[in-house]
Image 1 (cartoon, rainbow, N blue to C red):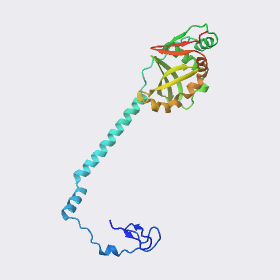
Image 2 (cartoon, helix red, strand yellow):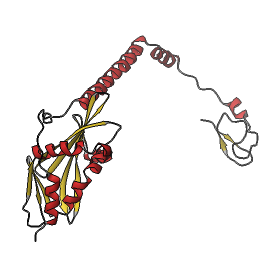
Image 3 (spheres, rainbow, N blue to C red):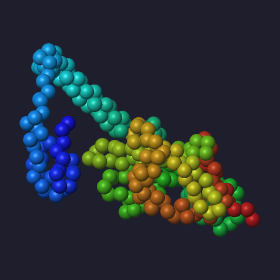
Length: 246
């Protein structure tokens, strides 16, 4: 490509300029009058023009974009359906169950080291959550109507699912943690989660903690009682809380 050299500051300018980009001196454009225009081979011109107006290529392009939009739309719809599908949760209890007073047990274990280990099943913890959270609606989010919280225990892992509703549709968010009690500090390492039935990577799940912030506030009393214990252990379907030794 021919450039225009400024006679004053020696700056190389683009061919379409009339004045120097730096100093503003008028450029000598006579170099273009002496340059020979490049001529394209007629055969190459014919092939290029034919390719531009080839109806088969135009149809292929249209088909590609049409099917691409269709596939992307199908993937988006499938993802939305998976988000709205409920995960495998225990059914709601139709008959009221008198829950174990876990909060009182925790407070007694925190002040009386002679209390033995506390062990609870998933059913007991879920019954307590259903009872306790009913009286703490003021601490729960008003954006999405809180319905219930359900826990599940595995070896070394605790998962909690929050069910909320929006205009009559239930939305489910699940978070899994490896939880341990270390010197009075409750350490929870994310192991991922789900939105509906869509898996969420642990790194992304760290940004979704806001979905459970209201639950943490509502259960703050129980959390403080657990911090006064020695250890917490998760096993399949059960959790064990160990008081500090005398």
